[in-house]
Image (cartoon, rainbow, N blue to C red; front, side):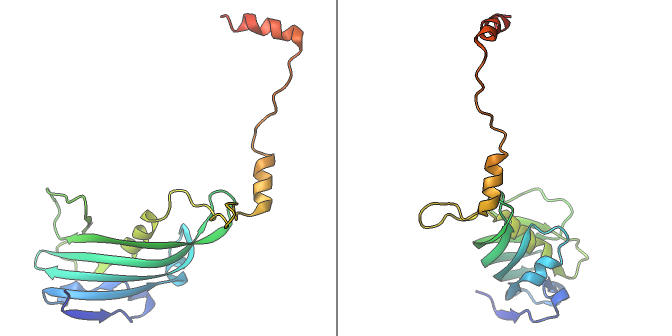
Length: 187
């Protein structure tokens, strides 16, 4: 269990940075709020908006940092079908290990690895947080169905897709040409 509780109430630009070099070996807890401003700072964000809470339990030992994290909340993403934005819930946990080495021989597949230079003094988690959110988004992002099992996608867009889906009605072939097509398919 962590020894120290650390509340991240720094200015927005620096709130996802942990200055671990000055911390004693031991356990720490960091709480983060991820909101619209976080996603606006990312140029090509797949997430439009959201509000998530993240708790990181960090164990500092001499040669590495062990992070156990939990994230809950919701994000606004673009529907793959109708292109409107909708809100989807996220809830996930994970582990990450911060390694201060150039070459690593053993890899634990259950733990994410974050590589830092041995000379680094702080850990910026903003990229890690964003990647964790992206990895936990559904592969196909569609509006949820309503209680009757019907899509809640934009109806105008669904109609457009249906009208322009490229499906052609089966054309009737003139019987005279039908006989010639049989010979074409023999070769």
